[in-house]
Length: 182
Image (cartoon, rainbow, N blue to C red):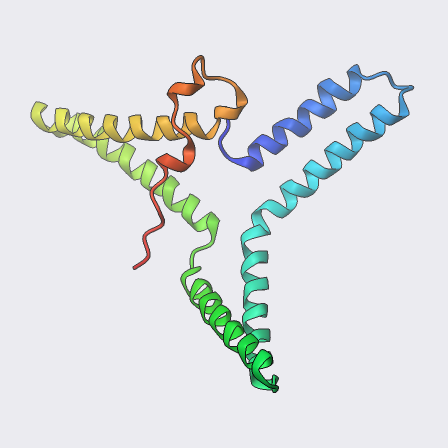
């Protein structure tokens, strides 16, 4: 069970190349072309996925700049002024979103990995040196966090069909905290 789309895509590509394509009737050109198209599309997704966030931020920055230029240039009557007012509001909102978009997605993933590693080392250190009371408190804290994360992981992969009773797993949207904006 893989959570990261890049690993999932690579697994699907490998399965297509090693299992599906060899099992196809090699004389069925439509099936062979469809399988190759699937591999090509997945390869393209894998290449673009890490850049998608930056692509969107770049487009937003260009649109913010374009909106400013249009607002400076646009002249007209009531309809034009109303359009420019709406454009100015959208431009300001876009600029604020862009200002908040500081961390790259990979930075977040790396921070998660660093915290996982540091957490594991802290647990090992407490287990080696801490009192029984401290060990129990640390164990309870880690188990509570792990239980909540496992539920999110299960919900994230719900559509893969691994759950014996999917109705008992909440939708992922209900388990994710909103992004805190400071």
